[in-house]
Image (cartoon, rainbow, N blue to C red; front, side, top):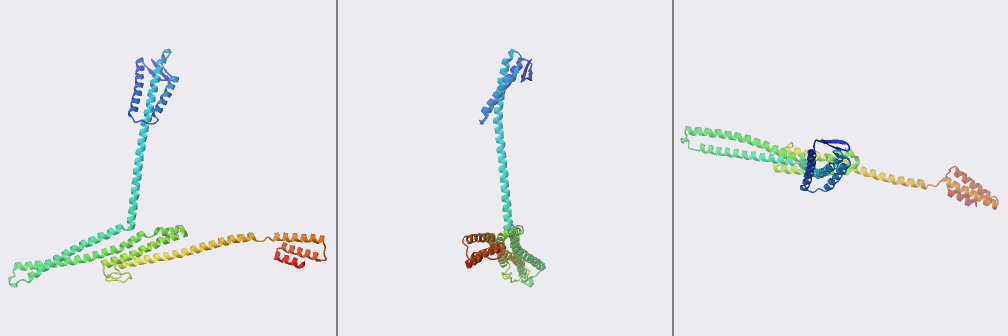
Length: 416
């Protein structure tokens, strides 16, 4: 029995020396397979250092704590198993580093591809959404509806024209049959004339119904065409500008006014478009001045023009109020600037005011100086009067009287 232990911990017990040889062969096979796989795989930076370091650490650990067998004869199998295990561990570590790095790189590349695909899909969705919103705002679907209505009217008109041609042919044949000789009239000819008359009546009835349907279809197509500019304007109305006015206040006046002014230009263009459609499709329809033609004041063009006029009037009034609000805001800003400048000047003026206490101190100093001079060189009564005047002036300043420094100096000069 051969015990294999590491740092005193029993790892495995081999039953015979042959099992020890098989263990060495297995460890060597692992090392050989690892080295072979490393040679076949693309070189990876750091794999050699990782394998060498792992092998060195395993060999050091085996030399310190590995024991195979017991007694003096355990040195050779211990060294053999330690070297084989170190080689296998080093090769396994290098393979793990190489193929793990390759797997991580592959996973990273796959993640990058998925992220790029998601970004492209997001960009495509945003592009499609922007295109859809642009088409909705430009009224592409309304133009398609108008074109489809025109195509339907054209097909109906062609069908009514064919029906009118068939009726004309029947009438011509019926007239030819009636203009024939009366003597040659036979029962077969009478039956044919009755069939022709019945066919002509049916054709006339169908033609009349077709013409009524055509008139209704033309009116519907005209209504669709005249309402298309109005529906497009309802989509393109400056709702962001009006919402900004409600939320942002005075700061949104200028952008809102510009947006509404541009929208008013679109309204005028829509009016011209409706007039052009009415003139092209229904001669005598309402013109730019509001005059009505055969279709009357309740025709599609007239109704659309009235709606556009109301919209232009409403947004025009709003634009005028915005312009007035801008003027008020500008005036308010100017007033605030004036108030700010006046406040700054007032503060400067208050700082530049003469301090009455300083004037009083000045007068007191002058009075004391004059008293000292009078004591040094007394004169007849003049010095006393001067001192009394200075004292009175100093007292007046102490009482915060309105006497100015210039008046006090003038009084002093008069006393001299």
